Image (cartoon, rainbow, N blue to C red; front, side):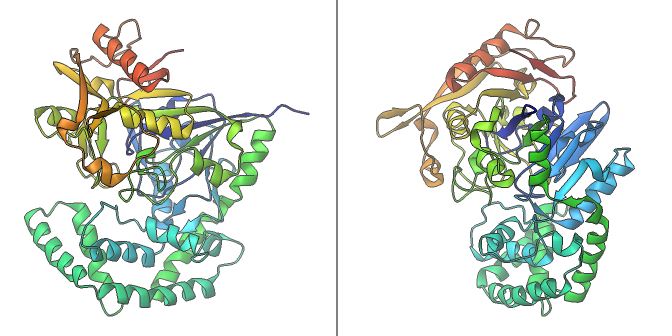
Length: 472
C-alpha cells in the first residue's frame, strides 16, 4: 500500500490580514492548495517579481505553475467575483486549467438577495459591526437552515431555474420586511451625507447602492438575475466537481496538501471576539469541516501573525494606537503593503502585538509553529511594544482559554501590560538572513517566541516572494 501524503494548514492568528497569502505562496513544496472557508469578503495579496496579485476566492498558489488549487464546499461563492477573478488571472498569463482548478459543486452560492439582505441587517441593527456587505452572513445562515442555492444549481449537469426562481421569490418578502425598519432609512440618509463629504469612499457607496435597491418597489429583477447566473454557470461548469473526493484521492496517492485559511482566528464565528466576528470557522475547525480530514492528519499547523496588530471594522482592540506610531504602522496607502483592506480599501486599525491573544489563537488551533510577517514595518521606531498581559480586578491575566468581545472592549490602556524593546533602523529589504537581521530585531523575534511558546520558523521582511527568512 502506498504511503499517505502530507497535510499542512496555514491560518491567521489575528483578526485577518496577517499575510497568509504570501506565506502560502512561499511554501512551494506542496502539490495541492485548498481554500476551505469564507468568501470574497477576504483578500490575499501575492507579489511575484513586479506583479501584484489580489485574490479573493482563488487560493494564493495559483501563481505557481503546476499547482492544483481547490475551493472547498465550506466556501461561499459570489459567481460574478469568481468569473472576474479567473478572467483577470488569465489576462495576466496565469494558466487556469480545469485539471488543476476545482470548485466544489456543493459550495453555497451568493446571489443578489443575500447581498441586499446583508446590507439591510447591517443597517437595521442601528450599530454597524463592520461587515464588508458581501452577503457572507446571510448565505451561511441559509446553509444552516438547509436552504439556499449551491454552485451545482448553476454549473451542474442541468441549470436549475425552478429552484433559483423559488429562492428569489422566497427572499423578496423578507427583504421588504427588513426594509421597513426605521433604522434603514436613517442609515440611507447618513450614508448620503457621508458620501457627499467623502465621494471616494467605496465601502459607503456600496452600502448606499445596496440599501437603495433594497428599499425600492422591486428590489430584485428575478429574470435578469437568473440570466446572469446562467451565464456565470456556463463559464464555471468546466471547473466544478467534488473537492472532498479530489483532496482525499490525492492525499491517499502520496500528494502533499496545504489548507489555506481566510481571515483570522480572532474573528472566527465560535472562537473570535463575538459578536464582532465573521460567519465561518477560520482555522483548523473550518478545514476539517470543509474537507473531512481527521484532526491528527494535519501534521503542520502554521500560524501567521504580523509583528504588530491590525483590525478592520468595529470590535475590541486592546492594544490599538492612535498616535504617530499608528501612522507609521499603517502607512499612507500609497504602497500595496500599507494597512488598507485588499477587498474594501478601508484603513485598518493598528496597534502593538497582543501576546495574550496570539497565544490564545495558537492554542485553539493546535499550532506547531509561527510565521511572523511585516517585521520590516517596525523598522525606524525607537521602541517596539508587545502586550504580555491584562490587569483585571487587580489580577494579571497572561493567558486566556476563551475570549469575549464585550469583555475585551472594557479594557483600557491602564489595563494592559506593555513590554517595550529597543527598536532598530529601517531595513533595506534585500537578501536578509537571520545572521544579518539587526540584533534588536532578533531580540524581538525571540521575545515573541517566548511569549507565544511556539517557534517562529518564518520571518517576512518584504512583500516580495524572496523576502522570507526560514528558520529551523
